[in-house]
Structures are given as C-alpha cells and as structure tokens.
Length: 445
View 1 (cartoon, rainbow, N blue to C red):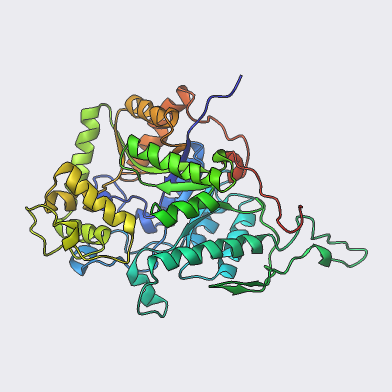
View 2: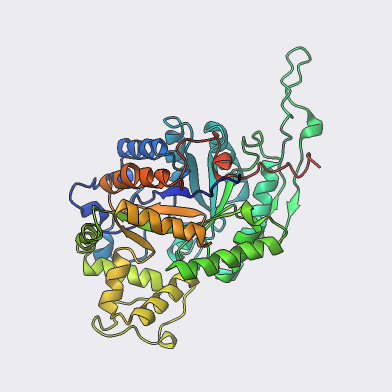
C-alpha cells in the first residue's frame, strides 16, 4: 500500500517574524532576531517538532525606507546567516539549515566553500536559497552606483548555479585516501579542475574542500517572476513562494513543476513550499483577535514605507484615503517585479485604499492560516491533496508564543491526521525532503 503523502514544514526565521508588529506583541521577545539564546531555543523546539528546516533569509542593506519608519523595524539588525547556522549546527542533530546567499553580490567560490563547510559541520543538513537580491540599495554596499538589471541578475544566477555545483563536484567522494603507509593523502586522479569561462564568470577551481555530505546542499529558490520560475524549474529542489490563495497556488505549482518536467526533471524532485503566516487560537474568533491585536501594533510610518518597498516606488505622496493610482501612473521599478504586481493586484481585487493597503503590507500581506489547530490542519491538508503545495514555509506571528502554538498545538494535530511525520526517518535534509543525492557530474558517469 502506498504511503500517505505528508507535508513538509520549514520555519522562516530571519527576521524571526515577517510581521513588523511582532516585536511589540505582549509577551514576545523584542530582541528575538539578535539573541543567540532565544534562537537556540527556537531551533531546538522546531527540531523536537520534526520540522524539515530552519530557513534564514538575508538582506545586504538596511531596508530602503525613511528613518521614521526604519526606526520601528526589528529587521535593521540580525545575524549573518552562515555564522548563526554554524553555531546552531552544534546544538541540533537533524533539522535542516537553510541560508540565503546572493548570486549578484557574491562570488561562486565563496558560496561553494561556505555551503560545503556548513554541510560538513552539520553532517548533511545545509541548503542554499539562491537569490538575485531585489533591494536596489544593496548595490551601494558593493561598489556599484546602480543595481544590476532584473534580467541580467537572473542570467548571472543561472551561470552561478552551474559554477557552484561544478565546484562542489571538484573531488570524487572517495578522493581522500589518507594512506599513512604510502603517505598519499588524496588521489590526484579524482580531482577535477573546473576551468569555467562564461559570459559573467571566470572560475578555475578546484574547490579546496571535500565534496559535501549531501553531494550538493539542497537548492532552494524564491523567485516568482518569469525568469525566477524558469530558474526554479531548472535548478531548485525546494521553492519558497507566496501565492495569495489556493487557486493561485495550484496554478503556480502546476507551472513550475511542468517547466521542471520540460527541462528533463522528475516533478517530485522539487518541493513547492508557500510561505504562510500561522496564527493558532482556541477558535476562529480567538485567532482573529490575536491578528487584530498584532496588526494594531503597526505604525502608519512603517506601513507606508513597507508599501513603498513592496511597490518599488515612493507611496508616501499618495492620498491615504484614496485608491492606489493607476499602474501607468506608478513609476516602473528595477526591484522585485513580483512584489509590485502583487501590490497592484491586491489593491484592485479588494478595492483597498492606500491606507488599508499600507496596513496590510506593514503587517503581513501574504497567505495566512488563522483559526483553531483543527481548522488549520484541515486547510493545510486540502492544499496538499489538491496540488497547491508540498508543504509550507511557516511564518510565525510573534515569538515565542506563536512558535509554541505551532509546534505544541498544530503539529500534533497534523500528526494525528497522518499529515506530518512523528519522527525523522534520516539525518540529512535530503532525506527529510525525499530528495536523491546527486551524482558527481565528473566522476560518477
């Protein structure tokens, strides 16, 4: 008998909550985003609940918003992902460790080496979230006056992936013989020099670290634009995305998996994991009251600045109590195309004023499951059964209570329904996700 399909759950943990009011919520830890003791307790609770992975996003600049809004943001300071995840790897043994790293503002050799190191330190639990970096302010921190064009960023990212995976395959798995008697440490016949010379990158290799435990760390991709979807289809093994509802999720799921098949891949070789804010209450009314309280903690300065970031244009001059201007009247942007399109779509679909729209973006504007553990588990099961998701990237509303509500109340209900594991069946992240260990492209032919 075929096993029942189960959900995969990863935890979005940088910042520890995407909701800008999270740090002000009663009982929350205001410094949760930058407190190692708190983060250690969070990841250990997530591992006890058998989560697949702890997912660290990253920013390469302070968010591009006015200081009156920025001064209210808990995202202005946080740990560099590799440093934090390396520390957390020694206090955990199973949960995956996913870090964001930019293909626009870093070099392939650095990325390949860091992720290989993290994979070895954690005994096979590393994942690379490939991003091209949407914030134009990042360019000014890396010696550039202008942000690289959207299409060019994705062209570089595709070549970057080829170089990094090629570097991970520099050594055969059995290259390091370490023969004391002969004095031979490694077999030179089992080392490959990449000698990559491409349109954007030139990298000789080989990488100066043994092949990762997982062969390659798991590849995560987060773009939803046209080039982002294609990059995901060709390279990703987990897709972090933000569909607004089940129908949109099913369309996105079918599109990316269809592209993967067209690229010669098995549809099951990548997992679609939409981001979802989860607020658990004793009832729907109780959970809604928690969200209303949370949303009430967002100041308008933060709200309108967050809307500007999502839109890619300054929204502060818009009439707060009027509709969003027509799309043709909003300047085009070199930031995230998906984010801009989402703002315009939400404004039109729900007929929101600028103030209402800003309030949504100032808090959390994406997919949310709000209700009792039973109701949320039922809804998540529907998404799994109907091809909207292979699991979810969980966004917590506030910490620690929001995380405790998920791990101690929702997860047991999912387990009771057979929708989520009760124990890990392996030790590597690939084993958690049901992904094959990739063959070495240079030595396993």
